[in-house]
Image (cartoon, rainbow, N blue to C red):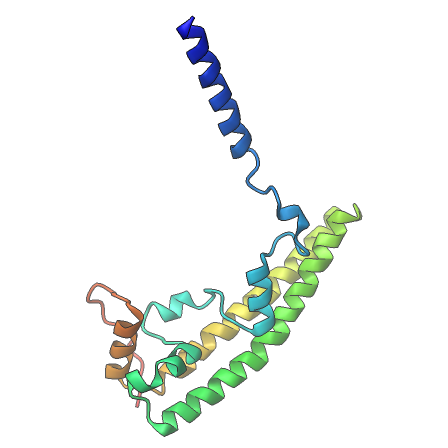
Amino acid sequence: MHRYLLAAIASTFLAASAGEAQQPYAGLEARPIKALSEQQIADLKAGRGMGLALAAELNGYPGPIHLLELSDKVGLSDQQRAQITSLFEAMKADAVPLGEKLLALETDLDAQFKNHTVTAESLKGTTATIGEVQAALRNTHLKYHLSTVALLAPAQIKHYEALRGYSRGGQEGHQGTHH
């Protein structure tokens, strides 16, 4: 009797676990753009980086907004602060329209599937355009990290990295020139 009871309990447990494993997207069907979370949509609208510039950020090329947040602790001069503020404003002016374009394209892709109007040809064109906009958006964020590092002294970069909690295992960063 105990064997049958244990088997029934195990069977119920396994069925419940399998059901949960088969439902990782449950609830996401209510999203306005199925492929993007609310946070991703907000980040795209605001021109935030969303980790697109991690290759720069984690290799000694600080981002403008993060530098401005730590400007006093990093020891930015008034001139550096003004230059980095200008870079941040330019980055945002470039990134926001690209984010809006990406949102429009993702909305279109979502609608094609929702309305069952998607074809192999429309899918190929839409995803190719999405890829181009994603690449342009990533380039935008990375190029401002590249521009920002040129305004900093090596000691400021090291201090910035320490404040952000980065450890590059003793590796030296880029070999660019800075002030």
